[in-house]
Image (cartoon, rainbow, N blue to C red; front, side, top):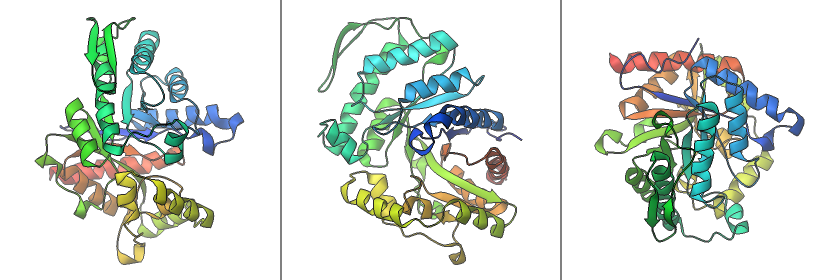
Length: 342
């Protein structure tokens, strides 16, 4: 079974997420990345998100492993300006395109964990980081468009007569996502013609994206089964309470300037007995960084349909726990599309 993402227009863009090196034994990590990438490709995902932060292996090396072990899956590589010059990012995209003929997506990240930024001596204020991100990404985009040399003189970056070789084939020019829910993040996405990716609120509280000119997507986990009882049993087994994780979460809240982090943290987890299928328990226990939709195929499909109707066409799923998890998710996406078209 494959994800039903292209039966009708507009097309959905569904991405999974690659495992984090910090959560897998070193000896097993490469095999796990390959396994999840192949599950994702077989399920019909367009691409797979690869995280970046100080605690993880380099995302470009992970992206290459994914490309070498799949036939069409596109890595969605997280890019943080503090880690490398925009020319280096463009060179990586161009080189992978030249070597493998595979398209890369870029997930532009303005912030990060506070301690990571402090260790890098990056004291740029929140909104200024997004202004910097616009300059950074603009240089990457101009270099990859080629073949003309790029001249750019901004507040944060400047290049003169800079040219990208080997040139990137036009069909491989990456689409850009911007992670962020704040006004500064949304403005950056609009300036770049990028897709703004956010961590959604319950569908009833989400604004209608049709009212803006910005392409939008959401980052969300899904656990769906034939019955409510089975779905919640799986969810609670996968994400049991963790006191250490709860303390870590609370500490992170005190130092984070992330708009989405604060937004989610202000919401209390809503248990199944209250009738909600929007679940923050994994986030509150520091097990993942996105909300979950949990319930029967019918109920989760209904929730997904609401997000679709609001204009979200890109979905970045959490790391799949098993191959059959993506099969269950395929069922709800197919049903959600049918609900929207009725």
